[in-house]
Structures are given as structure tokens and as C-alpha cells.
Image 1: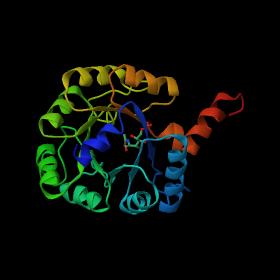
Image 2: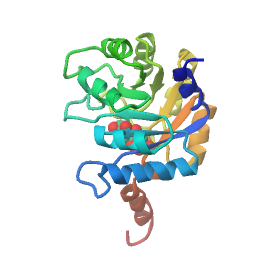
Image 3: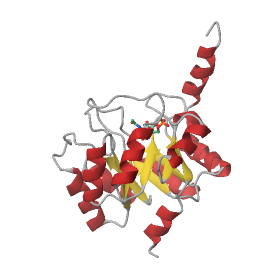
Length: 228
Ligand SMILES: CC(=O)N[C@H](C=O)[C@@H](O)[C@H](O)[C@H](O)COP(=O)(O)O
């Protein structure tokens, strides 16, 4: 079995932990993110998802798990690994999987999702995860050769709405339409929701905020108390 198939197989029915801090936040530091990723590994994560070239290099070096890498850049609607140059730079950090925006929106370099996926496959050995927001985008990404299709951007494009928890309907639709593994990502906030995603047909589940974003988690608890 090729190595890349082993990587995908290792994710089946398991948890991926997204370790990201946002610009200006106290935890926005590669060493901090690497420690968060090491802690996720101890807890049973099958892989780590992370962003930014410095974080990716360090996490790839220090954590003995496959890494899904991305580079969030710019203020344009397409900001997750928005161009081929970004994707190639992410691949160079050594990560096994490169996540790119897989939506139908225009990219800053004018390339299509299909062009970026085929160039990445032609020039590197990485697997490609397409972060999508609709069934049609998932279909197009799979047709274009994406190795994994995620619901990451459901609720974050102007033409989709945010569901309260993960978009399980989209997971179901993608899982029945596609041959490639479907990744449930976005607003998975409880273990029961993670399990429901697998039951809905997801191959694997990504949890970010609910595990690795203390400011938001603190806000959930503080907000539940009478005086905030
Ligand atoms: C929409 C977008 O930019 N999502 C990003 C993608 O990498 C991250 O900010 C999310 O934290 C990640 O998708 C995990 O989702 P959640 O934090 O909801 O578990």
C-alpha cells in the first residue's frame, strides 16, 4: 500500500485536532502550538491540523503524527492556502496533507481548485484536502483529484449558513455522493457531535476550538454564569 494510503487509513473513524491561534492572541506562537499539538497527541489524536509555515515546521518536527497543513493569508474571501504558491510553501514544510480552499470563489492567483490540486500532485508527494462549503464544491474537488474533502467552510461562505453544530446534513450528502473520504470539520463542540459525524458518514472528524482555543471555551463557561 503506498505511504499516502496508509496516512489516510490511519485517520479512519478517528479524531484530528486543529491547533491554531489567531493573530494577536497570546497563544499565537509556534512553540506554544507545538506543545498544544503534543498534548493532543497524548489524548489520542490521530493527526494534527495546523496553520502557518513556522507552526507547521515545528509541529512536523516534534509531533509523531500526520499533519494537515494550511496557510491562512489575506483578507480576500479565499484565505485558506489561497494560491498555488501558498500550497507549495506548505508542502515544503514536510506535512503529509495540504489543506486548500476548495470553494467555488475566485482565488487571488486566478487559478482554479482543479489547477492547484493537479499542480500540487505533479510537483510534490502531498495529499490534498479540499475545504469546501457545499455538496457541489465537494463533488468538483473530488473530481479534480482531492484526496480528502472537508466541510470546513460550510457556514463561512457568503452563500452558506452556519448550522448550530457541525453540518451533518452536508456530511451525509458528501459521504453518499463521493468516493473520497469526507472530513467533518467546523463547530464540532462535543464528543457526541464527533461521534454523530462518523455515524453520518464522515471518515474522520476535525475538532479545533473546543479542544485548543481556551479563550472561546472560557467564554462559553463565563457566559453561562449569571454575572458572565
Ligand atoms: C472557517 C475557518 O477558517 N476554519 C479554520 C480552518 O482551519 C479554523 O479556524 C477552525 O478552527 C477549524 O476549521 C476547526 O473548526 P472548529 O474550530 O469550529 O472546531
